[in-house]
Length: 100
Image (cartoon, rainbow, N blue to C red; front, top):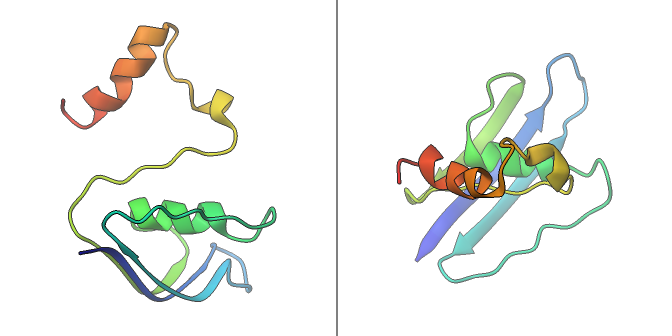
């Protein structure tokens, strides 16, 4: 079963003449474990951000379809993602954010 289908995706940030992503196409099926790796500035975070929510700025071309499951990601700077002052609040935050 196909979860993600990304077809001919290109994206450029506002005010930039260069694409951050150019003509990306891939399919991710249910049960697959996918690792996205590349050098700094190669577009990994840009792709993940577009996979979880439509771009609110910039120019996006191509399509991203997802089968209705919740998607999220963790960046390489995990200390910057802490939003609560207590560990148990932090653990509950994710579940509360999706209504559990």
